[in-house]
Image (cartoon, rainbow, N blue to C red):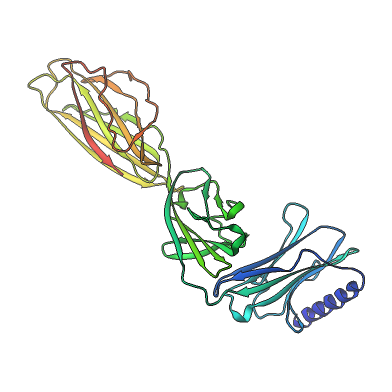
Length: 404
């Protein structure tokens, strides 16, 4: 296998020199790339699909040309390195009828600096080359400008994070920039120079860089909550600037559902369950009772609650209300019961919604008299108001406050 690869590499190089005698074209001026020591850099070049692809290669140009990697459509990859080719280079055919050839440089240092040449050999067009000059930014000043803030956003929205927050920094002065993402103290490079670095499935097809280096993330998902996105910029004066944004995600719960367990024993026990789905990050459930209760009859009520997280990361909340009468009522007493959900929303607001109302006489459940209320939004701290239909003799109370 080793001899076969050597033959393929030599064959490709010889073939390349034969074509060089026909046409050679440099596409784009030499591009300077600035990087901080220890950072990761991706060098990417593209060419239109014209003619037949013979081969492509990456080389480092010093006083001689050192071959780094070769790709041949029939013979595959060859790398002049101990590391696997897949960790060094990548070949793609993205939309747009182009070939894309990327060189990965990891943990760059002064020994990594220099010129890197990307070349495509096409038949009959000839050779197209692109040269990158990698420079390591050394002796830079301490970070002179920092900015940290939080963005609140509803799930499935589009998150837009400016790289420069409240600064008059001119974009033309930027030498290099990178976006990083951090969670639980672990920081990873997301993009550098506008080219994606991270191969994480969490951000696949959801991240793009806009004008003035803004980061766009869409659609926002539950697991984006708590991520810290940082923009690192090196400007021509040598200053290193950093802006960090923490993401806080909210999901609007569904309307709470209330049901009564059909079983009722001789002591007059009634059990109701209020369920709330699609909760994130938190919610409160409160029971409300409107009743006409004759003097001399006693009633005991207690609640239990439970929560669980589903496979999509949402919380599901359930509150169970049990009402017990110590004897059968001597009079026909009616009771109306419902539950209300309160959950935080972006901008220090609160989403609130109510279940349908269930009205019954002791021992006889009637159909609901009210339809479910629509979810509404209020400012933080607003409490649900009492129903306007309460009669002067009726008793109205909120008997339980269940919090997720």
